[in-house]
Image 1 (tube, rainbow, N blue to C red):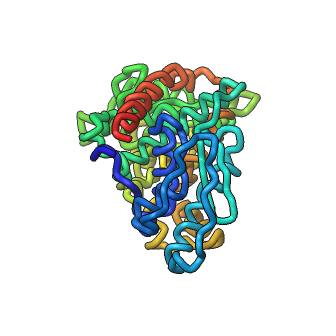
Image 2 (image 1 turned 135 degrees about the vertical axis):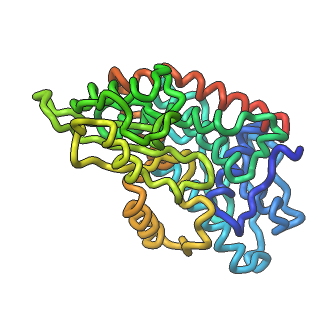
Length: 354
């Protein structure tokens, strides 16, 4: 395996270890991976070989005394993570999963009959590769993958679609560069029209001349049937890198109010959208060993960041939105091929590296 792919450290993050198995399955010609791969990569059992045949994924029973308790817990956590992904996504999970008493294998699923489910799987895979770059599983430079800003820009495509799905309404891709290529003040005027506010004639005094999006990437809303204000509005910040903790959107929305003479709504929802599970690489620092701890982690971060829409939620809400495409979010839907093109580049790179 070349330097473009780096095996996950199972003790560092069970989520990244699950990502590693999924990326490995996508990279291999046989399109499968097993827990033996992550065990071998972590030097747990030197004599434990990956299964060679695609149609024979069973692993031999092992002596339970071989693995120490910490390793057992780490493997169990990886098993539970991939099982959780399958439970939440159902047919939209792009892998077929088999879990035995002490074995795990996953293989790339055949193409789905439902084209929207197939699109959702492709969105999952794109987010997976973004997480791989973010988490160091894929060396973007060695793999010649376009990382930020290209990766962040690509993520805004599915984030906009997912935001519309979550709101059961529409969404506008506000983050720079916008697909409609509008200058900042024109984008403000467009948002004011969509949300029934009134834009100021010029930027507020003292504001920078170089404002692009004021840190707001996605604006989604749900309108009333009578057409009267005020809509339920969500303002979202996207985070595809390591610094999501420093990206609460609330202060940015307050600042954006100065661009209106009549703000669209006094009450709104902040949100954070990510292509990775929010807890990725946070498991040890937050002791995320139980479902109770995991739920508490989401609650604690929601208090500061707003609604959390991370990878699995991105995929599920994209399905909802793609079944009922609305006018403004269509700009993002029309850019899905750009997201998938970025993902194909990553896919080709990891296949060469495997």
